[in-house]
Image 1 (cartoon, rainbow, N blue to C red):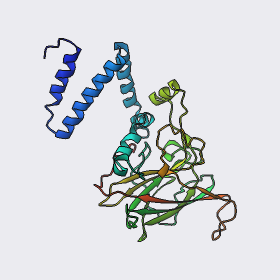
Image 2 (cartoon, helix red, strand yellow):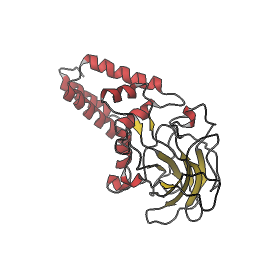
Image 3 (cartoon, one colour):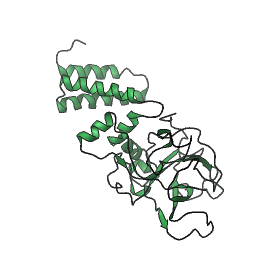
Image 4 (cartoon, rainbow, N blue to C red):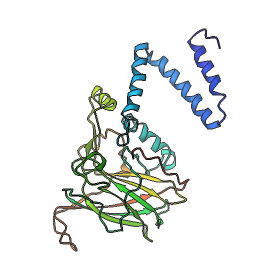
Length: 297
């Protein structure tokens, strides 16, 4: 492996990658080296730029903590998270899918809530939101006994782990679908929010003159043996940033109908006006049931 020129570097690196025992790892590493070396040649990367790039990767690692994941944030801001999601769902990206981004704020062990209960655990001013949802398979048959994690940002645009004013696990809950595949609960209407910009991702957005906002959305993670874990976000089409999501996550299938009601609720006079209602159907695809690794604790 005496290197004569830059072409030899790629040739020899590929030869080493070919020794990888696992076939899938071998395929990935060989493609990585091929495309990474081609990228470096294409942009004619300088030594200074290379050192700056490695420093940025180191900084991303240092910024990641129990409550913040800068790498997930960067992957979303480059469109990588959305691309991987769409290529792996909906018939390889050819049909609509309920799958979406996991995002950096999902936590394990959300408290169990009975259907019809609330996920509000501390004083959270905002317009009431009543959610009714159904979980079905691709043929439209209901999926009973599915476990559904839901979570969302508060009306001030913060998840509870970001906000000392909110109680632990506020606006998070775990439900079980009934015989008709349904679950339902009450909460407050969420708003769009800016992603954290005090790190590498923030500097990227500033360099591109991009805003940092995500449109308002409701997260869900749905688990049922025999089905691929469904990770979803249902977006409010009235949000001012619905067409310019900083994380490239909005698809037509994920647009919800957050219906505003200015009249009192017909059966619960305690619900303030205006109140909103969301009715959404989640479609699960068959596959291996593998729970993702939580991005934060």
